[in-house]
Length: 347
Image (cartoon, rainbow, N blue to C red; front, side):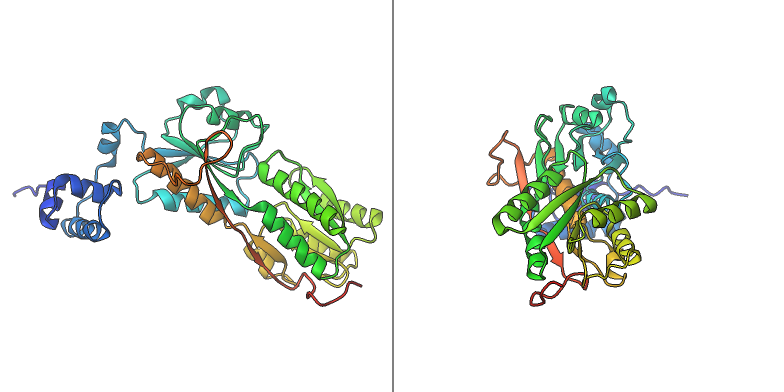
């Protein structure tokens, strides 16, 4: 029986009529190769049943072939971070890069020894020692959102416009007649939380609409949430709108309001700062902001891969502070039945 020789990169190059180097760049996605040539090389590789040896290539490049993913400790199971992770994997799965989740209790002193080529970090907490150690590891780091002051700067950041999104939410509540708004906000040192807080306070002063903040520590259980909302309404019976900033609490706030005899949106308008599938199927469906987590993860991954391949992203969009690269994208508001129509006066 004659053994069949496995196809080589040279075979793919010969089949597609290009050089070995062009075939390599086309299959790896690096370098300048036209879309037509890339497609022709990919078709030749498929016909020959050729697969690249990522381990050998990474060895030649002195690369680990892996990206480290850091998520805020205790929050990784939230819907936002799950979708963020899916976006990151989508950015790397055709580049023969694996994604390694860094455990929240990993020793900070060992961060420099992690066998990864770079890191993607979501919502850096200024008080997390592991986050600080990763940012100070000497490897490329792309963060989703900026990092708090005093924390080592990342190489690049993918940032949403939270100030504009906050003003949009509050404008809609005011147009629905809101005159006394409470913002339930997580008590955590993350820059997007700071941005929401600062934008809401500035909006209140500018629009002369009553607005207060109620910090929430961690993710409260149902009993704790009921106690919080009950205490809020007892102390502030004039409250006619609530913005729920923490992820995953919108449905709990809605059910608690209903248990306490408050009708949504007639008595209290309700908006969630983070959208999820659950918010669309409750009654009434809850108006929410789509933070586009999958796109945030995808963009962060693409930016890091570009850096690892020798690119630098968009040179026309540098940060004015620290020289880091910043990519900004907008958010989408989904109007549902938990807010009043614009023309309807408050009760």
